Image (cartoon, rainbow, N blue to C red):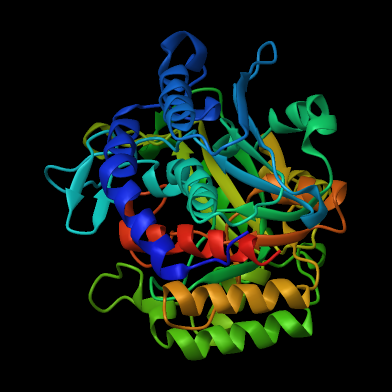
Length: 469
């Protein structure tokens, strides 16, 4: 068998991305296949099916030698693309993971751009889902094709592309149980759904935060009344929410107060944050679209990295009970509700956090108001096991080959529920978690884009690392 040639792989990867992958991703972006949490009629609407067939069709046309693929459908659940690629079983199995469901539209897209309107602007392909995470199937299979084209022996690989990740992957455990005998015992897990601190080197994710979401509702009266008549007697329902939030978060600093929602940050993760801050400098905060004069929360760049990777943080992502401003009369409203998104440290169990929220927010309601905590659910984060010497050296070598710089190791602030599941099921597995969600890519928000050159290089890195197993 041949040795891996990075230059030849780079040429092959560049050609298949330009000739085939980018045009197919363009069609994928046009499909509004929102995750089930955002489209309860996803099955009847058919968009998810269109996306599954588009990606599976490309995979069949560009299948690595020895690949068998099927679309698995469990009753009442989103479909799953599963592929098995024959290889040298003495090298250990590889599990390649991605997802094809998308976040909802979000407002604020530039003129001429939109979530379902693909726009190729230079090296960047704009539209929902290209970077998060539609490209992963293409990159995963292309990395194997690049190895086979050179005659490099590949290990046995399995690929899982789910359609429920943006809803918390609640369908995935049922599929994992269903196909457990076909997954095997992976030595390496490759996930391309994570972030990167810049587009100039390979970023290896060492941890992921968990998340708890819920709707917090406060009701004080049975119907709206004249604010001039009632204010001063009837407590405003929004004030009640403010009081409750003060139990959860220190307003001036964003510090999450309940003790059980924080954890001891491991020493190696603190050191990685320090190294990452040296690489990124002020891009730690400069990557975000602050208004002129607006500032980040206080702290060093290393501290800010730890804030977004190892400390709990609260975000209000939605509200109900508030009329549009043009319809807001002088009325004291009967109720207010807000959607909470609480990011958790990687080692805090989501079930424990849910219990804490119930205790903190429902006990002793202000003014005796009617308080409810609805749709409370969560996903536990993930902390990577120690990186094996062979994998760390392979990551650094791959980054040098395709980026010309060493790899960087850093936690990420998002949540990939599948990683926690895999960590429990395969405690001996090693993990390559990386992605293209870098500065400005804005996954989940307006103007999301895929940096194509970075995606090509990551495809090469995956091939290089697998060749070294």
